[in-house]
Image (cartoon, rainbow, N blue to C red; front, side, top):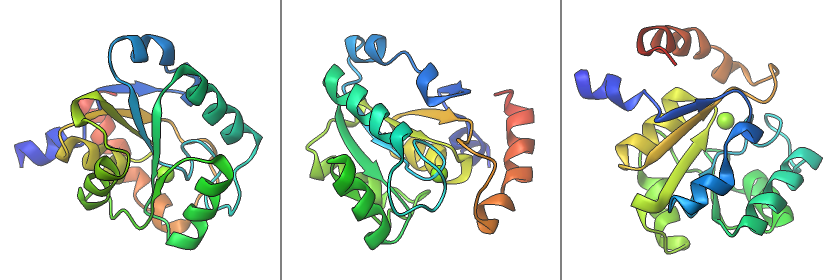
Length: 166
Ligand SMILES: [Mg+2]
């Protein structure tokens, strides 16, 4: 029980994706980012990235990061987003299981100690990253609008955040 609870706690928490000090992070040796898409770098359940996501990816590429989208979304939608953003992608990642993250590590040939998993959900993104022994960043969701099966998890997430103080 103790370990499960620990897996729900991210290494760092940010209000907005833009608040992450990316250049510093890169200099510190975290050179690879695994990114959730829905409500992390773009709106929930869209088929195409918006200007915000396009700008973010452009900035991260310019710094030099190795990037991979690690999404629980079905393949067609997340693959389309990744294609437009021109970054590698693991679809149907089954977070909080680590299977998708392990696939992503192989796909982009990344070292987990140099990788940060970034996402807007404790019970998928943060847990998957922690189970895979990598650094995890939690981001406040991009918009309030989200699909019902994510919405129903938020009160439980709130309780976890209250106890863990993040
Ligand atoms: Mg998400």
